[in-house]
Image (cartoon, rainbow, N blue to C red; front, side, top):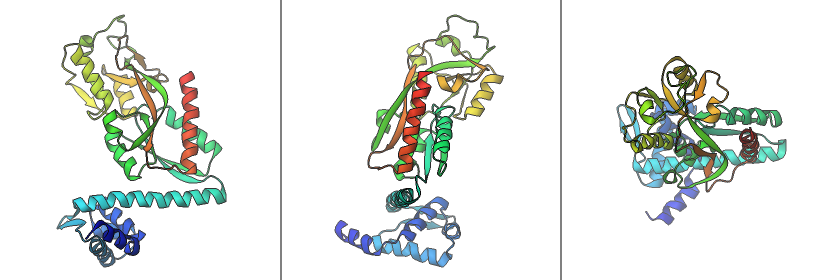
Amino acid sequence: MTAAQLEHHLLYRLKFRQLRLLVAVDHHRNILKASKELNIAQPAATKSIRELEDIMNVPLFERSSRGVTPTLYGEVAIKHAKFMLSQVKQISEEITSISQGITGHINVGTLLAASPTLIPQSVLKLKEERPNITVTIIEGTNDKLMPALRTGDIDVVVGRLPEFREREGLKQDIIYDEPISIVSRKDHPLADHKNISFSDLKEYDWILPPPSTSLRRQIESEFRNAGLEPPLQSIESISILTNFTLLAETDMIAAMPNHVVENNNDLIKLPITFDAATSAVGISYRSDYTPSTAVNYFIETLKQVANEISDI
């Protein structure tokens, strides 16, 4: 089948309920569970998947006794199905916003730098000014959030901007520069030192961001530049609450954005120069994406709050 023939088949035979089923089957990796989610009979769901495979003339899932797994064709179809469904959601929200005032639902991915201050203050300001807009916050790292952003599961990602190699297909707005500090509890053994080296820091356990993050790579570079191997005795965590508790109750050390620790009375910034002392915090969204009215309003709210934060 040629691309033109397949396009013709999709235009005249494809149904949105099939796209919803396709995404649900991928999520559950089980046709029965997907059919229950969408409140349809399993035989009807199975038949619908078969019809999709007939339309595209390729197998979308591999069947086994444990469930189903997308084929390479299925992964492509699922990716575009998510995007098309997100566009339908956007159409409905745009029309409702015009007829009823600004409404809508926004899925926001957040990274560590934005979690404790920027996101909470922005959501509170948004709800005060536009109470009909609802927000879902998804916390994670770039390797998890960016794929969801590209498929339309997330509208925007807010936080430390990814490195160049992770920016394909994305647009980014820098909203402020966030200093990074090495932090510990107030009564840490290094707290009274006037000058600290990375060899001093090597003596203690660390809380590190995941290996996929640019901050982790920068921390490791700092140690290697000092002729040292990066910390081996460490915990990997992006949980703000967990990290605060570990730092407050142990001699562990971490690298954190300044605004993450400024309002925490249990923590201090250690006196050491960190070459990655500043990183750009911003908003990432798809380059082919036209934000809804609700998303645009939230982006403007983020920028207003970011200006207030950076002026403190």
